[in-house]
Length: 166
Image (tube, rainbow, N blue to C red; front, side, top):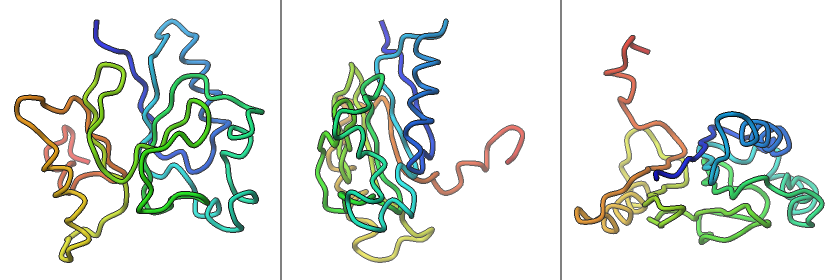
């Protein structure tokens, strides 16, 4: 059977609201789900200010005071929060909450998941802009296609062929 997953857009540091909603959906008629993928801005700009303890929306989850209801995987956009940055590798930041990393491909819950963290200019021109996407392309294999691609921003032109046009 195909895995049942949830996907969330921008969380912006509002973990309590996210996990309350996920718990409701997971225990409802559509559930249960195997995991949650969060794309876009996981942290807000305010989360990066004031050091790791002050602005960290993960603080209660790291201490074990709160627990994510299902395994949760996230990437970052412009803001990497108080304790991650563009060089951070995949790491479980709190029980049941995992930062996937800057870029890569992983097998998760029966799916081959490609991911690309960060925010890139509309027209990439510098080597840093294309390095991460090139590294991701090198990991791809026609024999083992990707089931799910996670990015923090929409691809250029994604709305051009939408019906009705966006």
